[in-house]
Amino acid sequence: MRDELRTERLLLRQWRDSDRLAFRQMNADPRVMEFFPELLTAEASDALFDRAEAHFNRHGFGPFAAELLETGAFIGFIGLSIPAFEAHFTPAVEIGWRIAFEHWNKGLATEGASAALSFGFKELALEQVVSFTVPANLRSRRVMERIGMTHNSADDFDHPRLPEGHPLRKHVLYRINPSSSPAAKARA
Ligand SMILES: CC(C)(COP(=O)(O)OP(=O)(O)OC[C@H]1O[C@@H](n2cnc3c(N)ncnc32)[C@H](O)[C@@H]1OP(=O)(O)O)[C@@H](O)C(=O)NCCC(=O)NCCS
Image (tube, rainbow, N blue to C red; front, side, top):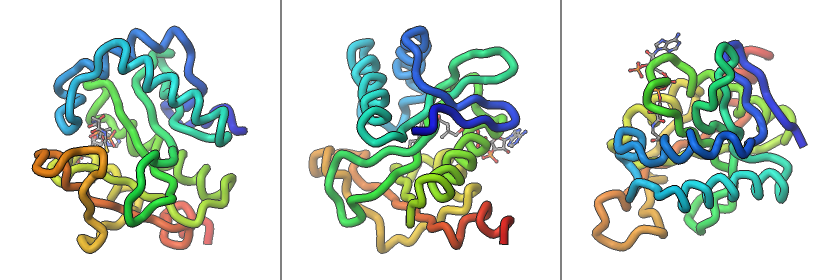
């Protein structure tokens, strides 16, 4: 299992109990949770934290806790996970991110996501990575595009965890494979 990844400004590492408070605050921020069905209660945030740790224990990889190297602050998560629902593209490995609002607009999500993607291709030998969100989440879609992922509208899907008619049910899917990844091209 790889415990951590380093980038210029970030340490992507295992979760610590001391991250729980900042994680709860982030998950209760309406700006961060705009494209999710609801704000998370402290209990729901802790359950998500526990699932991230359990994912590492079960699969040897998972969504890393993201720490700003300059200050040591926990700022959110970035990493790989296996979606726990069935859809036309599963089984799959997903790349995802959630960053506290005050750390947006600095390129940190893209920086961490590029490192997590390279790790997935080089060390886990993944053949494909997907990412998905609601069509209106343009910030997240731009991260997907900046790390080289592409969208085909034929892949769009209704999230099976949300009921028919729910405004967040429709999702766009992005994919990338090792040969089309910018990191792979840089090595060629
Ligand atoms: C999705 C999310 C991580 C994107 O955050 P972000 O700060 O926009 O993304 P990045 O960290 O890659 O930063 C890129 C932005 O910083 C700007 N930027 C400023 N300084 C920069 C620098 N030094 N390097 C790179 N980009 C920089 C870029 O221009 C870019 O802005 P643009 O997209 O308007 O052109 C964030 O909005 C978030 O956590 N949202 C809530 C959770 C969520 O929706 N997660 C995804 C669910 S699928």
